[in-house]
Image (cartoon, rainbow, N blue to C red; front, top):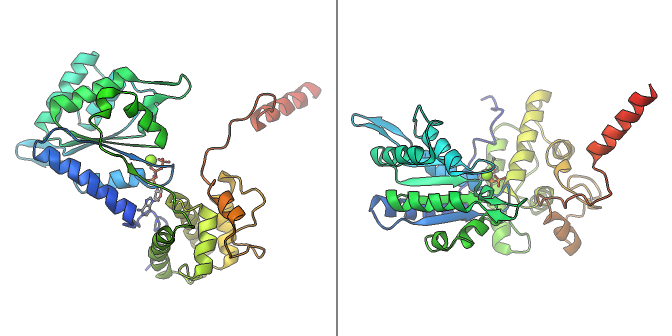
Length: 336
Ligand SMILES: Nc1ncnc2c1ncn2[C@@H]1O[C@H](COP(=O)(O)OP(=O)(O)OP(=O)(O)O)[C@@H](O)[C@H]1O
Ligand SMILES: [Mg+2]
């Protein structure tokens, strides 16, 4: 069988946090089906921990269907626009519900049409990803008008609400008394921590799932050995999204090189072309290189735990690379 280029994207590993999140979302969904009071839930965690994937998995188990009575849309799933307003939120939701006039009408008109569609299509739950956009970091304020609108939408239609975002998204809920009272304890996605035996076990199980899929097509170092597990952990900071990125690079390289074998050298190259540049490894040795110590040290674990975290903002007086490049280009042009 030919190895598909998107092999890694097709794999979904039902690790414990993932399953726990599915269960909590399912409870909110079933509550809405039973016409209980609207239940709201936030899925929070650092970038690349699998929040969008869990929403996608639940939503795909409850797809829209066309019946004799019309369209049924059990789950309305949208991504928050970068600066949400009532109009823009209503617009993306109307578009998702199939309203051909999604971008037409006043706030009230759009909201009215959306509520009618939610009722007519048997919608049980709204899912809003990238919920951190409800908090404007630049202006340091919550989009209260849009957040209040969301509360009214949930109250008036009786649907469940699941939002997902990086931990900063909780500010919107915490700063809005009425939203706060409707949200249950959030589901927290975390990076796997090598220091925790449970996390190590989870990470090993994820590696094993990816390894099994890859080993059907290629010969590669055993990911379940303690040494390889630690190398892969250090390469990805215990973030499943970075692991998926690295392994998808491995797959692309194997296909393009028409190889059937992956060695440490190939892993090193794939690492250099995928996750390597997205974070600062400091002086840590290359996790697939010969100098790498496969014994954990506090210093190494500390470096690795910063993988994927946002880089600190550039300080005043230190020009960004882009600015430097412009300056140089200008010099060159003026010198010409
Ligand atoms: N349970 C899983 N099984 C397999 N792969 C997964 C799983 N969860 C996440 N991934 C992989 O990790 C990648 C990142 O996951 P996802 O987009 O869900 O993260 P996120 O938490 O939404 O990140 P962000 O905050 O940056 O949007 C996915 O594209 C997928 O390849
Ligand atoms: Mg996401």
